Image 1 (cartoon, rainbow, N blue to C red):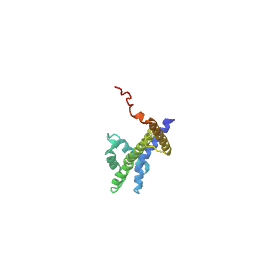
Image 2 (image 1 turned 30 degrees about the vertical axis):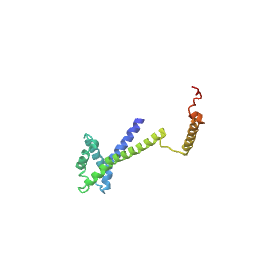
Image 3 (image 1 turned 120 degrees about the vertical axis):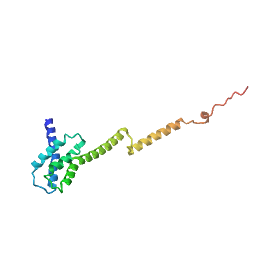
Image 4 (image 1 turned 135 degrees about the horizontal axis):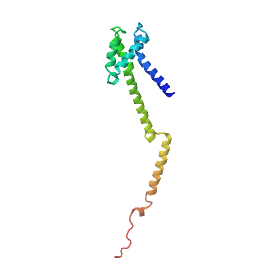
Length: 161
């Protein structure tokens, strides 16, 4: 059951990612080719470019896009379509990942401070601090000598020699 759900979610994710090119195509006001034609070519590009041993298939995706989709987009719009498609399918994911890491780090630091008790200040803490401070002051007062005899050494009363 869990495998089927994971497979279904992965299928939807990949289909959505590969469908971006169709929506870019339609966004430029083009409608000569069907969704099936464009998505088929996009999957072919995905498979071919995936064999490139570079992060994000850099270069292969862009070159393949230009090569495969030159027939689908007019020469005047293909470069803009390429930039928009690559931004949505690659760079936007990097940017969103960066934002997620920043948020995760901030939450992690805040939780760490809460666990260690650093940086958290409430009104109850003021009361506790006042009680602790008062107890320390009383202890110090108790430790102080009560009269001069506790401070000065005892005088030698035997002066008969």
